[in-house]
Amino acid sequence: MTAGSHAIKTGILADARLRRRKDLADLTCDAVLALLLLLFIAPIAWMIVLSFQSDRAIISMFWELDLTLDNVTAILADDQPFRAQLANSLVIVAGTVVLCGIASTLAAYGLSKLRLPWWLTATVGASCAVVPMLPPMALVPGFYVTLIQTGLLGSLAGLIILNTILNLPFATLLMKIGFDEIPPALQEAASIDGASEARSFWTIMLPLVTPSLITSSLFTAIMTWNEFLMGLTMTSGGTTSPLSVGIASLVQPYEVRWGQLSAVGSLAVVPIMIASVLASKRIIAGMTRGSVK
Image (cartoon, rainbow, N blue to C red; front, side, top):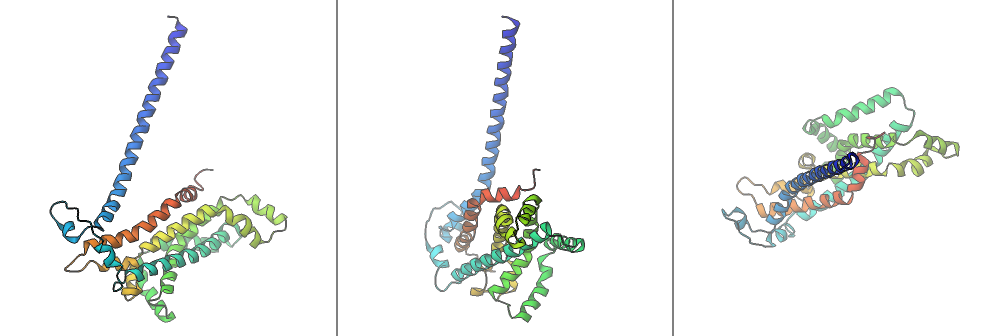
């Protein structure tokens, strides 16, 4: 065997070893991701299964499969508040997403593209960074008094405003990152062509920040859907409260209705999961903007 053929054979063997190592690394990565996905899905799948189990089978010491629709029919009965609470949550989420989306987009555009005084930009930026770190319980007394004085205590409009205030700082920062990634040359070109500030924003800037807007809207929807403290303290319960408060009402001092608790929990989890899956590509695009220059 000549030296040249020996070198070629050695190179082929080395490439084969590298491919095997790469395949093994890919297989290990896939296995780890599959395990993590299973750990994430298992509790949700188990909750859905329990929602169709009788309470006797749930608390039994041994595994029993006693499928029933009693839990679902119980929470959807006319004498139960869960249908009204589900409608309340949907209205609150929709109102908060719309209001927060409009406010955060306009605020982020002003911070990113308009020549505002430095002290105003610094104040708004600092507020957006500090407000999310405040404990929500510390804000309850001020919010409560404000809603009483404005006549919005116990109303859906009041909860929409409160959720907008709580989610607006992060949404504004996220939208600002999206606007910062737009080259200034586009805005300058539109100005040279005679486009007004409003037309430049509507026809050029807004379409380009759509991934960031979808990401911030979904984040706002998830946080609003899961919000509990304001719904508990700013409503009188029952049909006036959101679904998150209704779930907690099933945990009583002397009784826990596990089947109904699982059914309502499934009702609360599934819509957000579906929305997250449908918007996953937009979420990734919005969250990775600004990470690569």
